[in-house]
Each structure stands twice: as structure tokens, then as C-alpha cells.
Image (tube, rainbow, N blue to C red):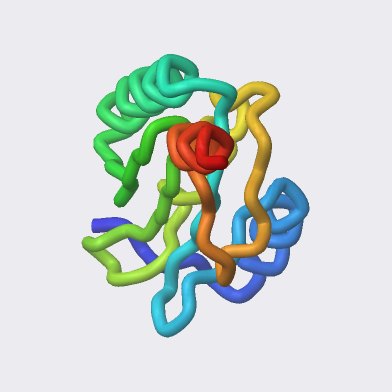
Length: 123
């Protein structure tokens, strides 16, 4: 069983992840990041690479995909909070995402590419 991150580990690991767009999840000991890729294919490719990394680490994200948007939450269910598994997977996912746009404002609804295209065709 994994242990939750200590206060010292959190102070070391979380600020650099925050700079890349990872943020706390309200009412949970978890971190979240939302990427916006140029296409569904790029989003799916990222998810495939991330799934392989997660499987190898035996640590799996909570995530959703809507066309070109990938929304990821990381927490370790065994310890009911953040562990080194989450930090390691977050860093790996950041490398795998490449130049995708990071959505930092999680309060606002995020429009996926298909919604933008549909709204652009309305006159």
C-alpha cells in the first residue's frame, strides 16, 4: 500500500506541477489538469501513451475525453489521497502531452473543437 505524500513532499512536488497547470481538486486530496489538443486523434494518441505509462506503473487516472479535450484527475485510491504515484504519473503525462494547450480555469465550461465548429456554422 502506498503512503500519502508528507507535507515536505507536497511542498517540494506540488508547486512545480502547479506551474504546468495541475491544480487541486476541491474537497479531495487529488490534482487535476485539462489539456486541449488540436484534434481528436492527438487527444486519443495522448490517452493511449498515457494509458501504457499508467498500466506499467499500475496506477490509473480518472479521466474523461470529449473530442479534443482530455480532463485528468490523479489520486491514489489505496491511501485515499496523493502519493508519489500521482506525482510520477503527472510528470510523465506532462511529457507525453507535448504542445497541447493547458486549460487552467477549471471553473469555466470548456468548448471542444466540435462545439466550436458547430457554433461557427450557425448564421
